[in-house]
Image (spheres, rainbow, N blue to C red):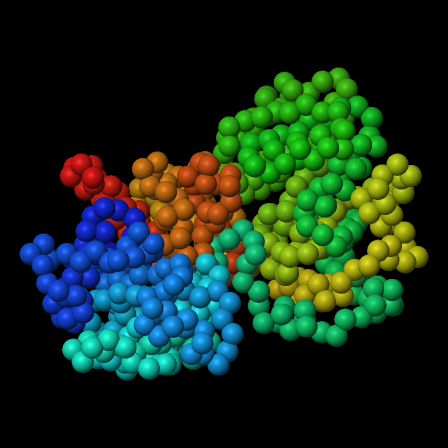
Length: 535
């Protein structure tokens, strides 16, 4: 059996709903005489079509459940009037939790705890700020341990008395269940977990971007960044990686000749779009996502008037690492100006920008600072241009006299704090995490995209077409593991990604991989069961 004996999910299959109706009957007809008994031994809730059910699965059995709905009136509204009238504080986005039930043999606390922890994550993601429940008076101590607080008068009959209760993030955090809930572990290409050191730096008192102290700090950051990637110049922009790539496109618009853009993923495609928007003259070498470019393919696309190449170094949309050494050799051999999007690779891999004309990076991914700053690296002197928008003109930033535009000293302080922690050990951890997870996932039989030319930054898994990657990603998220699955380009391909750029305990990596396998195996079995039974 999997190390995860239990796991929790949103009910989606006919068999799960059938088991829910039977558990509902066992609890609220046989055990708590709230509803009459019947021969079918099934109880379909009055709000079944509006309910979202959180269930606990052991092997293929539903052993616990609770239901959430946000349509008014709530069942509790019908009993005590609008719930807001019984509270002393405002309510903005409420939901109602009902039918909290666990099979008797599993009432050891673990299932109730898991349901509550899954519930709070689900509610936060949905934007609810409070959840109401009618708690049976037989389990008030348990409800209190989960964070529910009583309010208003009792409802029901002498045989089945209920206490109106509410749950907020604050009451949950202060409860036993909340205090032992581990923080969500992000496996995202960005943002990553931000250290206390970086957050402390962010909260320093702001200083003027015109001051000598700011200039000193800016030059220090630029010096560290330049040394990190072997670049003579680096300029820091207040904006995202898209801004930095627009700055590169702006510089390429001043070049003569045509360009060649390499696209084998989402972000190569974005370079094509950005180049088009700035009216660049270029050709495109397009390949299937995750397939490597060969030397012969690239050279075959070069024309006499080709003067530059633009590519993504680590194409995170597929987990592909494009060959920087090969691109540099081709560019040198054919006297081309090589431009690179290093937004994902900067801070995660050893990157040497020798021989690279222009390259870009950001603060909010593997650098492990806050999102909001982007960088352009180069070796050559750049003069201001009178034809480019001033904010996109790299030459404007070359001026030594003053900072050309307003900048954030807080983001700069956070960047400096993060840069202090990047070293060779950082890169080794990324590779080790990638290797560990790659081996784990291959043992489970997963299909890994770009395995032969994979970037150690991220793993891309192809989810079987019969299963929704969103369903799988949501389950993992509500268990405390935030994988990368919400981007449109991933959902279109039914892919899930696991980034390796954060700092992880080996035990967390193993638990996450086993849970992922457990969830996918369960979903496959559930589908097969439905097909066999004609559901």
